Length: 275
Image 1 (cartoon, one colour):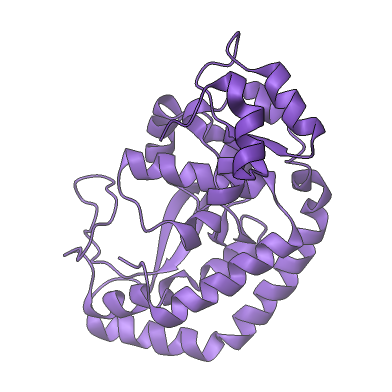
Image 2 (cartoon, helix red, strand yellow):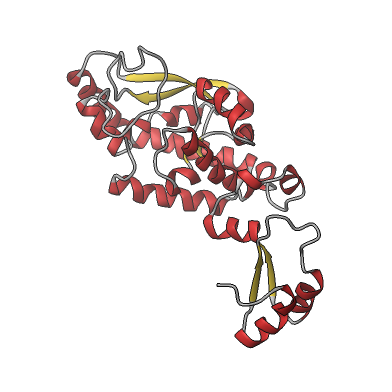
């Protein structure tokens, strides 16, 4: 509902007891009511930028309207350098502990896979890591050996290529456990953007602005996008997940990682979002 024009902002705030103004104009040049907003600000009313407010509210960056200057001059993204060294030591300790803890489970899953279908226990797939370096991601095999005979494709709901055991280990995220080895080797982190295959990365970097920027940190077993956005299998999904990945990189911190790990544990226990 329109309740007035720019010249009435100050009086509207006073009459309606407004304590926050959000400026969300498509074009600010020449149209921003500077004097009126300055009056409100001097009276103690918060004046927020619409893009920043949306970012804090939704936990993601809007890549469609994100100018490079907003990244260059942003107060965020400091954690990439500050937290990197500490994060590596935490990854080493946690992944080593995880490998030892899950060793009996490794053996049971391996036996189940061998009894259920022909093929190897582990599945290796080339992925793009930090700074665009390629590495071999390790997972428990959850699909038939000829799953990608016609070329790389994203998984879909009720994917017919998934084996009987594979359906259960994917639902419980147990197929991801061997990636602790990738973490030990320094190719991945416990928390970070999920690594994508080179085939899709080349395509998405051409179609989606800032897509390559997700590779400034190590990919993770879990991430901010994984706990807030469902499994994606389209270009639009990849763009939406990128918004969460860039938000994670901007706000990288120990508390952020702890929150993601806690939420991931809840998702695993409830079996949500797997395909």
